[in-house]
Image 1 (cartoon, rainbow over the protein chains, first blue to last red):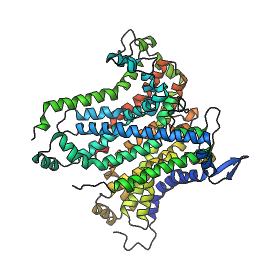
Image 2: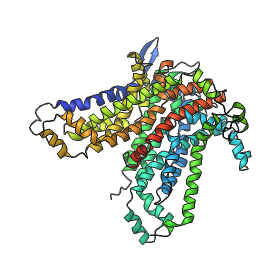
Image 3: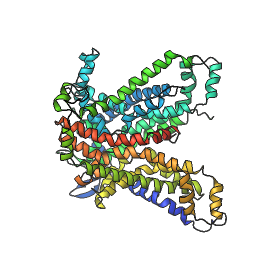
Length: 308
Length: 279
């Protein structure tokens, strides 16, 4: 190292290099994060901020109106995540497996085209699908009619029992590009020799995928799962763009993000309450932390990694 | 080579699946774009037909340009995105260089501290961020958004860039030191040009989420003068929800800039993802 003779002096350049990033990151991200956790312990009484300990959490989990909304949002959020894991990631793996096929023509065209929805904003995606699924415009019913399935059509976004699943599928449509790309990258990094060795042993086609490639890409699937988890548990934009802050019909598409927004920012007649909002944010923080810890200590350490 | 890998049936099947999915991916975008150029009647009568001489109409675009201040929104989005990206890259690269280049007490700890933000979304702290912006008078300024997006982008930027900076040859830097270059010159003149591809990757990764974000513009800068394109189109569409021409045109105008950026940067983006920068 270069610093053998200088270690006694303060090396100012290190400080200069680190300071801007650390200051902005600490001031705008870490400090507000902990401040939000702290605010959850306060409430406002007569325009004064008073410390109330865990009272906000008691309200959130104990008060019937609050707890009903919270469990509804949490349950919906888990369903939202479940659909992503069940639909988005398998489709992503399938597309990546096909794309990574050597000598597939037009691979980069398919890749770029399938990734396009991912770059669009939630506002565009939400409204575009709202229009397409709308019974007024009639694109969805007439398409179903063309394949003889018109009886299946329902105004999905307007029905309590379908709305959340429909939105989850719209979100899957938007984000399928991400697992596809990451898995594609993982598949490309598998050395040809391993596949050829498998071929010599008679393992080809589907068998090669299940027995050789899938075990090798499991770490990538793990990363995608945790990214999906974190992304879903702070999702907000799509639901807000398509259904508004009330997450209709009758809160059936309410997830933690929209619940947090309504609570702390207020909507229509309900006034915003930053302290209850902080309590919800704290709960979200806890959920995400638990998820990340399960991944880091429960899943990641058990996945076998192969070095080539 | 093996037969199964060259089977024409397999290949047809592969193209079939990919084509089907490509159609699913592009169909909604296509429908929105073509209908934005049609008359109201034609939108409802033949939603899937291309606009022709009889049904062509720009009425929606006229409404949008008259009613909404889309150029201002676009300019705001542009300022926020470019400034945030610049700061993420500058600050991120500097911090990454410090972590990758020098041995000092707390180096690992600092790296872990900066990496915390990769997994924990900044939105959790929104309540306190809003409070801070209110007390510093930054609410309804673009600076508030720039600061938030810079903080949001830094963790991943530092993480990716320090990986790349570790690969820059020590001999080169030491040669610079022998020639009497300061540490700052070494960083800006020698190291930054060498990690430019990695910086482009970081920029492209950050660009899309910043441009598309709705949460922070809605909460921190909802004023007319500071609306971003995403928020602006959301509000506009909400107001004009029954004017289908205007809604479709507004959607198309929101899609186009992103699509153009994507066409320019898609190579970089895809190379960035597939080169394993996020593994």
